[in-house]
Image (cartoon, rainbow, N blue to C red; front, side, top):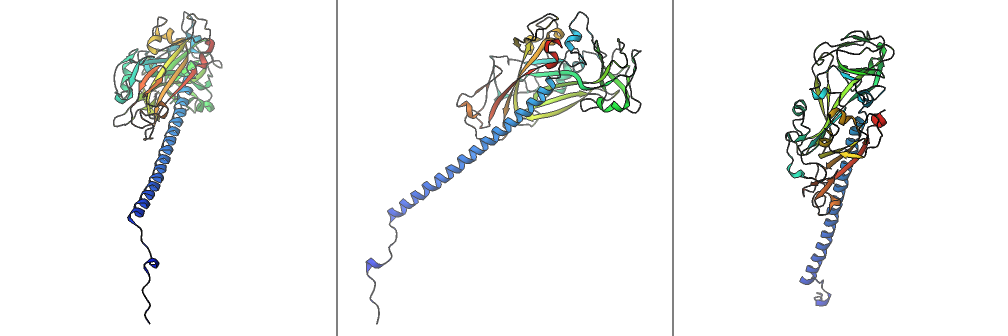
Length: 397
């Protein structure tokens, strides 16, 4: 017998249009919340990663700079201040000192970029390279090597003797002598900082920097070149078992932007020479993402031979250059260096507007007193500053 049709109330009911719309709205809200949480998490992770990269680069860059700066003034058992502090200079060189890379008479030499003194303003959105706006004037040999230099960033050249040395075996007795040393000590000379071409001989009363014509490890001898980079011979006799042989180091730090590079980098240029060879250079990228380097120099309050150790004058390289008459005397009184680097994460970090999270909307970073405008490109930027004492120059050694 056929069943009677079900009543209307017992049949399955569908969703009304209103119910469907409410469900869609609730679902959309949930999806938007989830997507927003994902975006915020991704942005936060990118910013944290960018901060980490910038912080790590800053540590590495400052380590390199500080290591070299702390060696300034090292010219054997006394500092360059002790060798040049009187009326007669006991720091001698066989090189033509017009070639600035070999001017060991000046251990530290800064070059101030135009309009970058404290109180000035620059904009990293319009960085240009290869300019000549530096004070003192950038020497031609350095200008050629640093051809990709950023115009609004300072440059510093450092010269010193290597921390390792070898005792001289026999007394020197000629203008271009043959120097002897224990052959087993060769590795102390040919270390990572020198190719055994640029050398120095020093005792506690004088130092002479020179180029070797050849170096024979097995025989324990180094011949002083009578030509090449040397334009004059020895004018000092060094006694065996008293004087020591060192490697001579000349480096330059600058911010450069090579062709096709998106962001500048901090570079270290080291000048080297093989025995009897031409002067060469090795250019190494220390860290990437450095848009500016600003440097101030602390000068001893005493302008006489006797130093006090108080660096109460902080000045730019332009002011230091002739502050005490001659560049050699002026720079010999520098005992402290204040370095500032403006670092940028080369990957987009989703930082707040104007490039750095803690800036808010100001768009300006202050670096060693210089006001730097940064773009709203969402790349994280941060300044890092450090003060370095030139330990070999404290109280004139």
